[in-house]
Amino acid sequence: MLISKRRALKFVKKQPPFIKFSMVGFAVSILDLGLFVLMIFLGIHYLLAFSVSFTIGTVLKYIYEKGFVFDNKTNHIAKQFTLFEVFSVADFLINMLLIFIFVDWLFFEPIIARIITSLITFLIIYCAHKNITFSSRFFN
Image 1 (cartoon, one colour):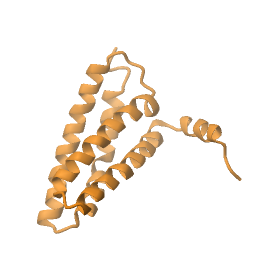
Image 2 (tube, one colour):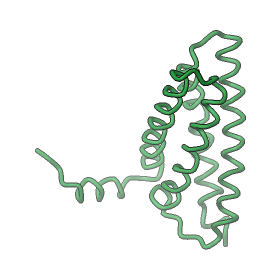
Image 3 (tube, one colour):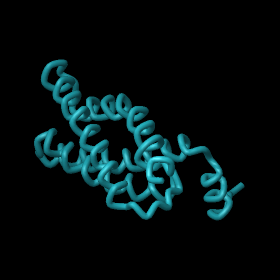
């Protein structure tokens, strides 16, 4: 039995923010990881590959989290995007440090290290965006 796109979208929109955040995070992470793997395969250093794929993923996450996950309609886009980027830079630095530790000290494969670090920071970033970046209380 096939579900129509309209019914599927309606079902997804009714989900709580954490579920939608997880869905967006999963979809963007697949794209991010795919780009990361491609760059590793092409011989690009794993930290540079991480930097590029993370940056592209961050822009996509902002677009989808603002409009879809948190249904945020604030007019303070510059302030909001700045907060989003502050948390993204923190996320980036934590991930970069953890990837370095996993690869250079613990001898994990870069792809496995990337997956593990994403899982570690997932909940922290969700809480930051839900309670600060996309909170209507914060911008009133």
